[in-house]
Amino acid sequence: MPSRSLSVSVLLIPALAMLLAACGREAPRSTTDAPIVDAEDASDTDAANDVGASDDDAVADDGTDEAGADDGAGSDTEAPTPDLDVGLTLTQVAELASPTAAAVGPDGTFYLGDRPGTVHPLAAEGAGEAVVDLRDETTTDGERGLLGLAFAADGSELYVSFTDRDGGTVIEAFRVVDGSPDAADRRTVFALDQPYANHNGGDIQVGPDGRLYLGLGDGGGGGDPLEAGQDLTTPLGALLRIDPLAAEPYGIPSDNPFLDVDDAAREIVAYGLRNPWRFSFDRQTDDLWLADVGQNSWEEINRVPFDELSGANFGWNLMEGTHRFEGDEPDDHVPPIYEYETRGPEGCAVTGGYVYRGAAIDGLQGAYLYSDACNGSIRALAVDEAGGVVEQAELGVAAGQVVSFGQDTDGELYVLDLGGPVYRLDPA
Image (cartoon, rainbow, N blue to C red; front, side):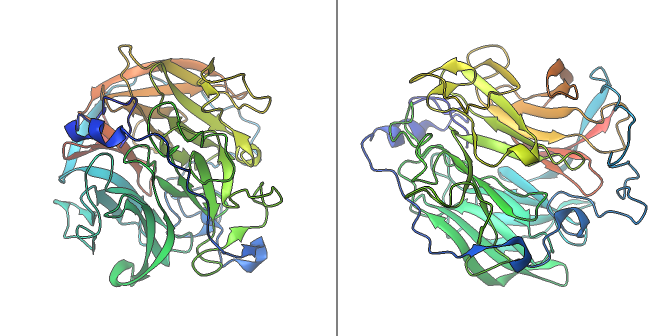
């Protein structure tokens, strides 16, 4: 779960403070001997053209997605500015113990991940029976539990990101049979020891290139005591890119940026992160949107064009947002497009969301929606073609402890409240 300081959990978990006392541990290093793979060595991983790609629509023959929206390719028409005054409502569609993640299966089924360790299909009457149950393998102590879901680009596997009983980050793959995950047919894709109980990150997404992306926090503690954010020898504090379909347990894409850097973790595609709490790829532009929880002063939202993501440095712990933290701003710093004060009225721990690409809420298309785990208000950013924020606003609806969003096959958005409810965002 997201956290901002040594003594306070934004999710109000009293046990967290005692879990953050140690400060002198060595940062875990990547120990994988996974092979480097070229794009042509991978399985069919064109996420934009496969039914079952995580959070992406299938593409119709006429170049439009199934919701009927033009994908923008080859169009000279300027996209209209989103209407951030649109009337909205939250419709509850399910109730779980502590929902934390969502993903779309190969047949379009919307799945929900529950923090205690279960995965459920969403039906008309609510959350269905669990298709995956990891409750004996994880714990909800501190900021732990089931933290992320994604389906392989070809729909063949469900990836579940969680922390094991010792607090380490694990990604398990479950084979998809007849459109549904088979709980008995599984393999471990990725595992990494965590030095502390907080800043686990844990979100996973399949990118526009069909690769699996994993966001990891800096390992925990306050102020990055391991200095992991700027340390390329550890996967901590970084966005990783791997290819589970290309090799066992996974392959490392040959265009990952630090393959030739001595002792670097080869999985890293971008770095300089404190606790990336939800990231997504815009299904129309492929841009990465990533929210990074701040220390004590600034919450940040980052937007990076996909073709500029490789090697990006988000700045932590030298920078907190656009502000100096433990040193000078690095020359390669990619600053956030938006930041707000941690101790202000907007909240204290940002929760990233999605660019709205659905059809149900007319006028909201193109706006990036997000929230804060301490505030719960659903908010939006509108940006121009150059990537600058031209408007930001609260949208007039709020949940409780918003810790995640989901996007269904039609591009409609869901809001996950750690207290139990799952909502669909609808027009008022």
